[in-house]
Image 1 (cartoon, rainbow, N blue to C red):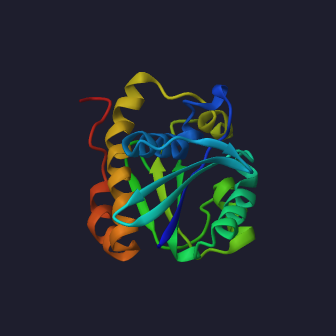
Image 2: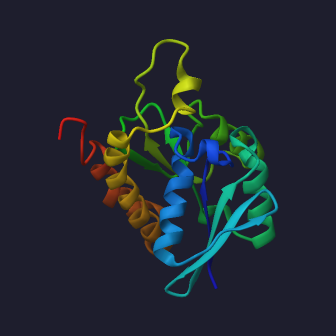
Length: 197
């Protein structure tokens, strides 16, 4: 059976639950709910399993805190014997407007500490889905911004991109990264909703 590792980056603990930095967690929570999968507290992360047309999907929310996310990713790739080509990491991204997203087959960490640590341990050759959180902060305010909570209005803008992210995960598993990028990246260039709508 083909196996896939889908990782949503974030920080464990209720105080981080609705922060922008936990957008990866939010996507995985939504996918697990739609798949009737339940997370268990395992080594280096909360882990759940789902299946899709004969393929096994391991869902991982690292509990190492963001800056050490690579420890969890490397461990679960090895434990489940999953090829790196079947790894998809979902993270927040201040370089993209809220509600936008971008899927890439590989590349740099873009200044994201979680992606940076993963890159240190396994290299750049893994797929990543960046979920836009915007950058409405003054110089030097990035940490407070990413660790700040979404407002209700912002969550309304985020929700359509989370729903699309679930389709992206399914397409990644069933069709592969190239077809999925071609199909979905054009949809992620502008948010489905804005604060004005």
